[in-house]
Image (cartoon, rainbow, N blue to C red; front, side, top):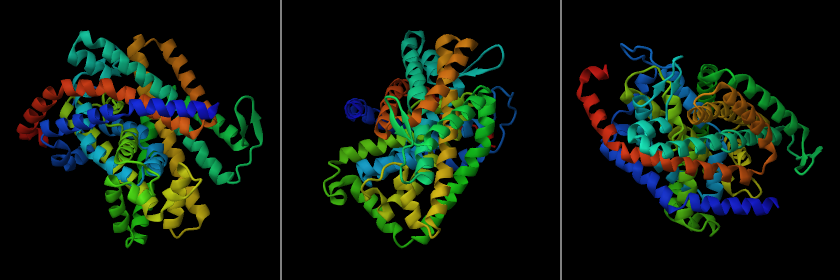
Length: 473
């Protein structure tokens, strides 16, 4: 029965993430890159500078600082996609998937810029000063009321993605899998759950503890979520970055060969997989879908957090938003990918997900295996946990748009979200990731339509902004 469901989901995923959607997202990013004159390359240093500098003369419109909004967005993006998703992409698409992941990120930075720009330009405030913004807002206000159906379609897909996919089951499944692999490597199943099968006590206890912590935080709203994210995300990202630098330094003689394999495999996967991976398209599909899963450029999720920033300048927030894609994929995902390729971890039979990543770091670092495995487990736990929090905010905002912000409904939704977090560990890895891929694709489609339609507005106002040198101070 489980195998039948997995196969059905894989078939649906193949249709959703087929050539049309991949091409749509890729072409959209290219068009935005051209129309903004390569803003992601020209203005990246300025973007990083503005992360830490408050806007002059800001009237404090918004709920959190630009830094906090970026950390909230990163809390959702820097998660299992960086550690488990990369491993899954390489295992199923070959080393070449990493190349297409990077290509997607470089182009996706322009997409993320556009999303952050539109999030500020078209956001709305309620009587209490709370912000409602994101694709549903810029679709309805930017394209007009006749496109409200498309805005609602995005909101419904975003709601489902948070509740059933990338926000809950994917993240908590990765957390519990990592904890189990460390504390219960023999895979002892000591608890039999009706209709689900055998699980360890670690799985049961972890699911309860994680769901409880999530409930405590998410009922506090965006300010509590951003407060947690602003502390945890930078600390864990720096720790993981240091590990990655150590991997590169200690294996520097093997890194060029690993990079060469990644580039060559992007165009000839069979040469490196013995025919296991069938085509360039498979490498592209896995790399791009996992890249979008990881950095969420084009997905439409990050602009929901960007809309809450205390700024009145769309261009400024657009630049800050695009740094998230650079940090997430160009830096963190590549750290994971290079470690996996240079150690050959992706070829170890029987390993999947975080097991591949853990093995790679154990082989690449001189520390005892137990210590390395513990550090990787801690990184994954915190990355994924903050992703659960960030995606709760995204999906809650989608719910607010759909129901007009009725507090009782929001509380019910948060309760359901907590239940989904609790249930996540009891699903198969294949099902979890495939469901997330499908829902990601369904979110991306209406969002990319809006970005195409509003690209002229983005290009015009970006050009006008940079003409005024006072804006660059």
